[in-house]
Amino acid sequence: GYEGEGFPVRCAFAGVDLRDLDPFVHMDQMGEVDYAPGEPKGTPWHPHRGFETVTYMIDGTMDHQDSQGGGGSITNGDTQWMTAGGGILHIEAPPEHLVVSGGLFHGVQLWVNLPRSNKMAAPRYQDITGREVALLSSPDGGALVRVIAGEMDGHQGPGSTYTPITLSHVTVAPGASVTLPWNARYNAIAYVLGGSGTVGTERRPVRTGQTTVYGSGDTLTFAATEGTESMEMFVLGGEPIREPVAMAGPFVMNTKAEVLQAFEDFQSGRFGQP
Image 1 (cartoon, rainbow, N blue to C red):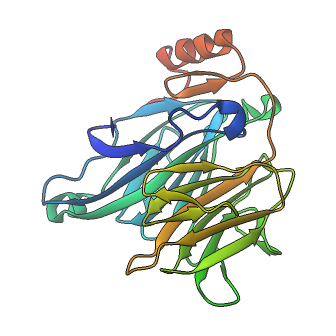
Image 2 (cartoon, helix red, strand yellow):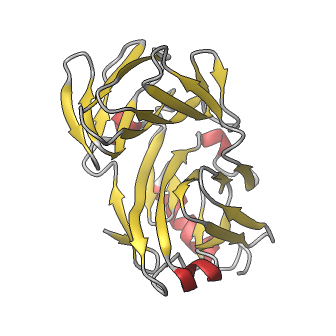
């Protein structure tokens, strides 16, 4: 599909039951697209309430501004972690020089639910550079793991979270396989950003744009197809919140009445002004 002003996305969680995703509610793979000059696009000003957006840029650059005067840029390997909490307006767009030149654009935006007690938390940002993530490799060197948030095999990522979660970008070399330790209390999801291979001990085939929901257990296994292309995966999981979810547009609340209140607050200007 298309988001914002018309940039292409793959809706990673389409058709997956929210109970299997908890505490996550939505994820888009943005691109991968090689824009011609003048083609790069972003989003107009828009509101959020009740959750966190995590934008991970693999290639390209995205600028952001918000209604509280915040702003910045994220580029190759950087993550912008925005807690919308009680409400914020923001805009995301490629910088002018990238619009003029065109170029490769590829990233992920994930929506992380907030528990009822934190729905109306004060908005905040975490800007995590690619240099800050924890890097791990498998014993044979066939896999590289970038830990953005949470813990993996004793290594802690820099992202601070309200709900216990783990986020990582995993690259598996052609023909290689890896088994990662996993917190058995967490759900486990693996989305293929690029390439192909297999998941689980049953070696089920997967390819670009497909999502795997793992069953319970304390390890995750995947392998890349033999050939010339690595398999790139976004691997995530967390401790389920197990609260009602009411979603509409840019709001993620517990009840329909709370969503309607969010729309009313936005229309009344209580989220601030662009």
